Length: 149
Image 1 (cartoon, rainbow, N blue to C red):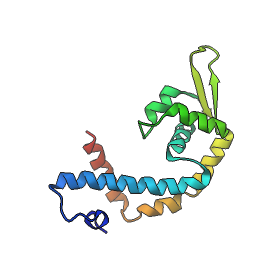
Image 2: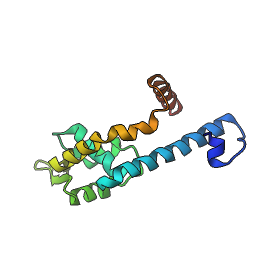
Image 3: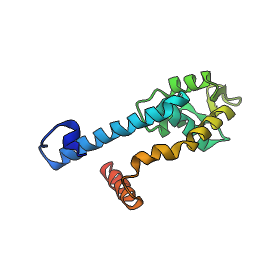
């Protein structure tokens, strides 16, 4: 399939416009497949991102500002996400003993176990992207990095 067929547009004003629209369209497609993959686990992509960030720092805990700065979606409300994950018993939220203004957030064993279960299913999700080989993926990563400057 081509972008033109997918969005039913015959032509673009210029190649850069087509490229940006293609990136946005592809991003939306990836996001939809990610939502579908995480739904059986009761997570949104943003909640999954918070858990992955906390797993990356485990066993150390992080402040909310640290989590926010590492989020993929910079428009996410990290406070709300952490609270939802805390309600699901996937993270802990504790006032720091040495600085009462600081709140430390950590992943629970239940959160680690949930990520392990998602990791076990990762290969089936990654099959969505088998149309490009590792060399093409590397080139795409370089180009996307270059695009962001």
